[in-house]
Image 1 (cartoon, rainbow, N blue to C red):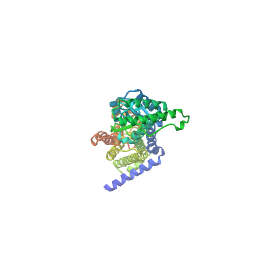
Image 2: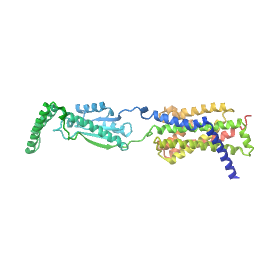
Image 3: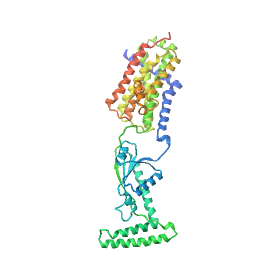
Image 4: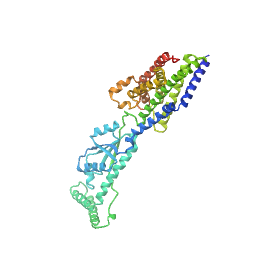
Length: 430
């Protein structure tokens, strides 16, 4: 008898799934619309809608000289960076919190080393602090800084007048330099010959022959700052939980309407003469709704992972979240089915009920950007707990204990909703 009862329930479920697939509008709102929603909003919120700008960089000028400020102006003019002036602590904290890609620090003495090629303490130094997970950006930043420092040095070598001034400064500094006389003699000879060469370069009209290379333009010190994850890694990690909940909402409403249609057409009465008990008929409807919700959710999650690079923090917790959401909205399906006597009334009241839940529960605007008072009102919306459970497994980093609240609420809503809906359900229109 138990095996026969289960076969009857599965047969009912298979029948309802076939009806859903044949209903083009129901199929669209269960499968296609949530995918369009998730993709559209993920794209809109990704990279400012496709508009590209410079990398957001914290710029720390510890040197505070005319040369360091001029270098900052050069970086701003280049367009590769969007610089924000900060103190060292502020810059490191901005990188740690993920507000900036990296921090560029011009150390003390940067300007003197940059301006005095022969008498400085060595090549100018720049520090880069970045998240180790963003090594590609770190390497790109290093390359850009080296490029501009090399251009700065090259401009001096290609300007004989500036070079002769540097040479004169270097030769004057030798008089007080603490070094052996033999070394001073060698350096004076070098400076004299270099000055003669620069004088020749200044007199030539062939600009293609001017220029030198071989000096180290800058020494770059790199340090790593591990970013504190406080939000989704991409816009698709918050758009797909929303899209999944829209799929679940549409599926629940579709099955609620199917119950009303079958009652109006007398299908339920004929099924009871099969003979099938009320419990088995409703159980078959619940299993079909549950299976369809799981199918919609799994399809959307596979697209999110394979196409848009979404990476769940915990697959087991994600499975728990999806099962809880499916059970919760099966119960809601039963409640919606008793909101009216006709298809039109149930459809209208059902969508109104769904829209209110979606608006207050983060189905239209991500939960983490909603005002605090809206989040408080949203506590009564199962949509909020469904999104929170899925986000908790994908990017919020929920522990099993933290998942118990949203999942427990969804399971409670599902059980109570199904019990209330089944008790209040009318098997005939009279």
